[in-house]
Image (cartoon, rainbow, N blue to C red; front, side):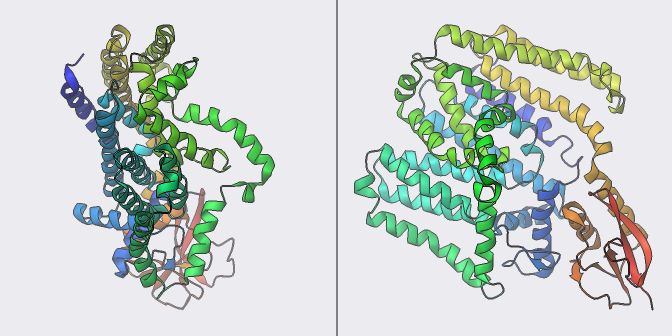
Length: 524
């Protein structure tokens, strides 16, 4: 369809713009997005960039590096909301894909670097979920993946000072993003990489290792030293530890852990469709021999095999926690598919037929759009239906006809499918999404009740989405108060929890728990 890497890259970039940016702010924040952006916004309002807070109370669950990034980009945009937070996420997604491209191009002979990048962008979980929201996980996953790649790059060259220096620097960055998971990845990956290069005994207890560890600790220690002047560090690290352990058998019991052990592979097969189906290629006797024929590919397989069990044995795991493994798996699968010594021709043929069938089914589903319940919610249904069907048909045809570049053609087809998704399913979801109702009601509330001071009374729960939108609309931190003593203030009150609140109902706010929270003034 296109000639050379440049042609495929140009086509990909042109499709990525509408695929990832069309209607980026159509859906309101989900809970975690609301938390990340509210913490950033409160730092802006308070002028305190050291202590993360939610409604004025210390927030211990995550270190603040991602919040600082949100602040930086939001200041560029001139507001805090969906566009800056989600654009930040897309920037890291682009860098994530570019990193996969660069390392495959450098070290993986026979593997298309454009395919390696596109398979990151079009992994089902990323394409139809994580790329739509301003979550921390793509950024964190890119840092962890880059760490893997630098371990290989400097390990295979015997550059041990760089091996440790870059790795621990990235570990420090990852820790400031997400806390203890960064330490777990580091604790597994360093010994495995050293063993891979046959240098564990010589290098693990080396001076270079110790120096790199100490240097990486310095910026983290400096931050927490400043943090300690406001907040108790034992409490902070207790929360960070609990955040990590709550996913494991210590919180969920061994029975759920055993069930999770057997269901985990099938769940991830579903979440990471369609490229997880490339696992068909591993169903032959020479798989291990093929992987060992390229050192970089075998390193990817080793990193995947060593680190994945952490999540395989953890009960409460969301697919977004696994994104750093996506380019590792893709590189291995593409090598088995594309190298001369790869999977048998018959197995490759059945793999291609599976993907052709998926493309045909998606195109047929689009052609049948008017028959689906809810299609009447699609704006300008007839024009959207015809345009979407033509778009998918145009990109489906090369998947069916081209045997040589079917992976690249299918990746472009998926980007086209995301464009169709933006035009059809997103508008329908917009009208029924709870977060959108919250956002709309907050805008109504601020117009009806401008000015004054707003508070949250006692343990009234506004939930994450309403917390952000009320603060953003009000223009200042909405703190929690145990006593209602501001005669000019307005208090969010859960009247079922506090029926005795001595005040008048001024208005009410619909929150994502599908209930109303009253905005009340105190009786004079």
